[in-house]
Length: 162
Image 1 (cartoon, one colour):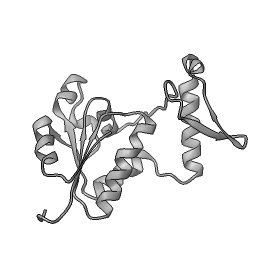
Image 2: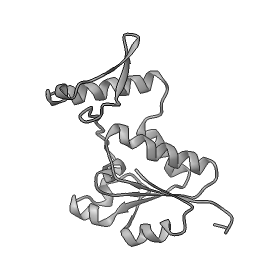
Image 3: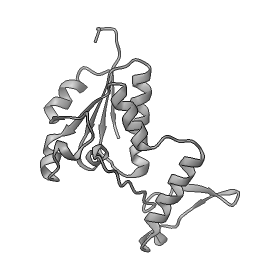
């Protein structure tokens, strides 16, 4: 990386369906623009690197989540989120909407990130904590800890926490 070249790092801490999109969209877009990008997956963001994704969406505590329905944008009252099956229904509705609108899946965005040579770092402490191995993960991530990320972040022009 030359001294003039900009770079980006992203700490990925959330693994819900709606939280998975921002880091992958930003990382793949920056990589397409020629920026070296590092993504550091820690705590609940780490499962986004698993081979078998089972992403869910939850409307609990998210009053901004309003879905286009019946010609309007309707929210789901938080009280309804405690009913069994509501998260599954919200997930299905969101996935259907994304498919209908042509939004890439997280699996597709991950593939794009790997193809674009985005540096994917799986947090070693989180791997140990949740008893994952690299065999559980897609091909591409490297193991690293906080020091690995900090070394990268101190050199990056853009640092994001998502």
